[in-house]
Length: 102
Image (cartoon, rainbow, N blue to C red):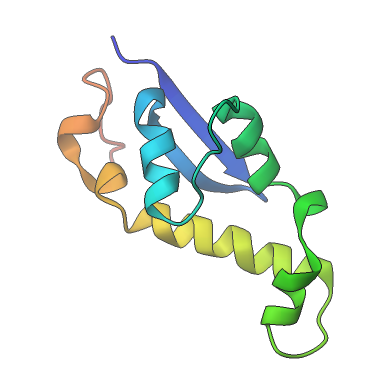
């Protein structure tokens, strides 16, 4: 059986699949886990509002709040996940999962 990892931020799924695929997935979207770091700790840090840096705020090009930058970051994480092959690959779904009937 596969160990699953689900990461949620601001009520949005930013990752839900096999735990062993998470490091490569986040690396592929520009968030490479530093060597000798605990991936779980790293994932928590990139999802945290406390880790928003001034350069992320400045990159927007005008004065915005930390909350706005954070919301945008989480929305981008969610968009990447929703459009990823990991999310859409039916072969990666838990075999016990059953579609919800309408």
